[in-house]
Amino acid sequence: MGRGRFKAKPTGRRNFSTPEEMAAGSSARPRTFKKKEAEYSEEEESGEESGGDPEQETEKKKGILHISEIQNPNLVKPKNMKARAADVESTPELSRREREEIERQKAHERYMRLQEQGKTEQSRKDLERLAMVRQQRVEAAKKRDEEKAAKEQKRAEARK
Image 1: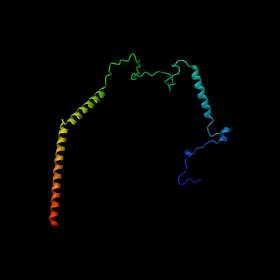
Image 2: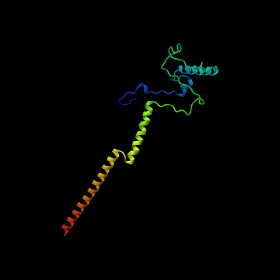
Image 3: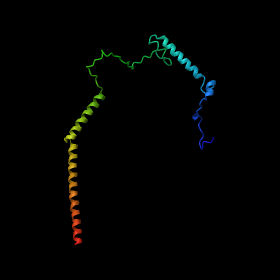
Image 4: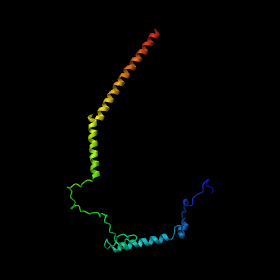
């Protein structure tokens, strides 16, 4: 059947098994899947039966890791602490970057508070500019009113 300009890719086809194929056991699904599934279920059952030490049930290590243990001096092993042993009152020391970040945030908050109160140089300049702009707007509005009044006066004289 023609599909237009482009060919269908072989990866896009789906083959569904019919009920007859499934009953006959000749479906498109590979037979090895059933074998793998059976092996997996047997492993689970044997794992449940052993129920031994958790050390024996450790994961299989890849490569030669199961032969030799790695001695890495840079490896930091996690310290497992119990809840009773944890010292709640002592605060952990912050790193330099964390301390600097906290100081930066506090300084920014102080600056913003002063900015709102109008005590910084920048806020003073902003307020002066704002006052100047307001004054210019008021003057421009007065000028427009005067020009409008002058136009209306000319029209009134022209009608007479």
